[in-house]
Image 1 (cartoon, helix red, strand yellow):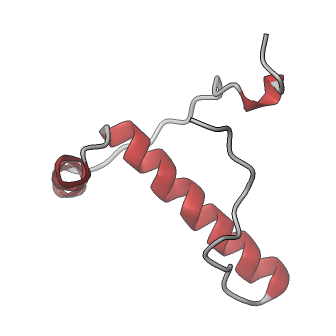
Image 2 (cartoon, rainbow, N blue to C red; image 1 turned 90 degrees about the horizontal axis):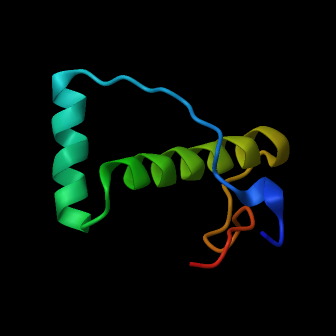
Length: 72
């Protein structure tokens, strides 16, 4: 059904925020027009990529360097 079954997003992680953090995320979500959960996922993945690049390569990742993403 899927070209790569491992790309199906069925792994769930739970994150809890206090009222101030939640407000910040909701404001950012309204500004960008993205769903809050989508925004959190994108922020987490960008930070993870940056941390991995820094840890393994000792440098900041290039703007176009990213993990492969599914189209759409």
